[in-house]
Image (cartoon, rainbow, N blue to C red; front, side, top):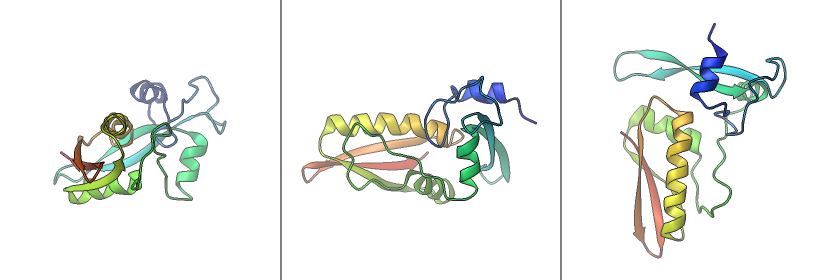
Amino acid sequence: MSDLNAIGEKDNWICWLCDKPVDPDASVNSDLGPSADSYAAAKAKKGSATVERLAHRACNTMKGKIAPVVPWIKDVVVADPSPIFETVERLQRKGGREVIARCMDSVDAEKVADWLVDRLGRLAPETKFAIDIKPGGGQYMLSLRAD
């Protein structure tokens, strides 16, 4: 059994799925209570390791019923956003890079890139990601790559 407090501290008491705070004092039987979500993280050609992330109990339970959806930042307009969870899984398996979104100006593109790097640190802490911003055609393309 994992030490839930250690996982919570590591993840700053933020649910990796919904990106909302988790109350460390809530009952583990409460829907909004803390729970440890375990998953096998691929290691470079050496099998897999078990990684644990903090989640609300309800978020963790629902993940077993429906595919997780990681919401995009809400205070910036993002055009053609790719599904974050599926994109991250694909890049972890295959490598390479993918265009993940478009923004209309460089300020928004930088804000989205900073937010996404922070968000991916909770989603896939064992993988380093980099975001490239390329201007063109009056917009800014954000591409994500796993380093």
